[in-house]
Amino acid sequence: MLFYLIGGWIFTFKFSLEDAVKELRPQLCYQCMKCSSGCTAAKVVNNYRPHEIVALVKAGYSDELINSDVIWACSVCLKCVEYCPQRVSPFEVVMALRNESIARGRVPPKSFVEMAKSVLKVGHIQEPMYIMSKDFEEVSRMELGLPEMPKPKDFEKFKQHVLLVGFEKLKEVIRV
Amino acid sequence: MKFLLYLGCTTATKQYGYELSLRATLPLLGVELEHPKDMNCCGVPMKGISKFYPYYACARIMALAESQGLDIIAPCNGCHLNLTETIYKLKLNPLLMSAVNELLKEEGLKYTGKAMVYHPVEILHDKIGIEKITSSIKRKLPEIPVSSHPGCHLIRPTEFPRPETRDGPLKLDRLIEAIGLKARDYPEKYECCGAAILPYSPEAAIKTAAFRIKRALAVGSKAITSLCPYCIDMLDGKQDAAKTITGDQNISIPALYYTQLLGLALGLDEKELGMSLNMSPVEVLLEEVKV
Ligand code: SF4
Ligand code: SF4
Image (cartoon, rainbow over all chains, first blue to last red):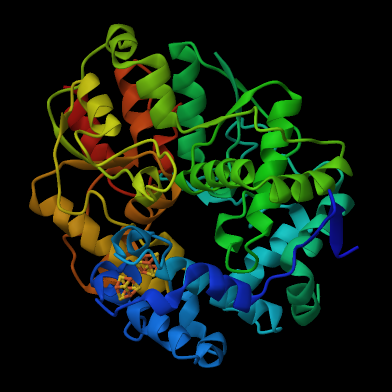
């Protein structure tokens, strides 16, 4: 059940970098570097420069990026989306590279694996934690009188759908 | 006014001060909050895993709200962005809308585009209104300079409507002044807190937050306030780590939710507002606010 027939159209939830590149058109980039000038991640991560990422994709070196962890450094601040005079959206290019690396079975940095595992286990990126208060009390939702955190009711169905919309490959490689 | 409170992961799993202060303040201003029985993550941190997951996840959340005939309050900037983007994109793309609904059908759900999503800043500023807030507060807080940190996703992207714009004063700043405090601009106001860099490099993320805090101190702000659990997690919860990483021992400023400040003005007790859960020196501010 990987695609749906809707009104004569076939819709698949399969990601393709080729389609993404067609849509995002990095070839329009003229290397003005506006994106990198304001980039939150570029200020603190040495080798992360969105204009370089766009240039590499434009020149056909996507594989190098897909095999590198650096694409996971973006802080999702969306400043480059606003700044780019060519409407390239380096942010979306980076997300497309991340999606492609997952589709090819690469394992993302550990914290992303943990979050994905948790989504497949409880439907959220993490479970409620015990927090240390200033009076050195360990408190949870219950002690604070907060109602239980809701989960998807029909969890098996939910999980099946999450796998279908793009978690299948990741589940295979991280073995959950 | 009744809404479904969709907390999202960060608020519901660790930023309890936000949830406590929302639950304590909004009902006093005539907003009834319904707790959902079935919910999932909005998918914002999972966008890199699959661009389709957020569409399914958010449509599911909106469909659940629709089944109860309610609109949603999403207190997290990330959730609010993702939910708005999904509504916008599904409405533009009927094929995607029906594909997602094919999945939801199997769970007995359907999203038609009727249910809407609001951020607390919209509820407070647009639905409740400054006038009602000023008339409901028990006492005006002293004119202490406080910097607002709205957070990226309240302002960006401009492709679809966001709660705040940079043209003119922020709603959050008007809300700060409505309870007596002084809104003090600072150079990092429209910047990113760095939270999403945490999974890649905690050190890089904390450096980002440290920089924001230093600039707020430099303009003489006595506190930083926000309505985003990621921002407060970074600006409040990471001050000790920021001291260690940057070696700057002066990084110390009360950072708290606007709803906590509002609660104080409404005469609520600091405990009810979860203020013992803030990691930054909020007691310094409490002292000044009490007099
Ligand atoms: S969204 Fe990512 S790539 Fe774009 S400016 Fe922000 S951190 Fe840089
Ligand atoms: S802002 Fe746009 S056009 Fe300029 S370098 Fe970045 S991607 Fe290229």
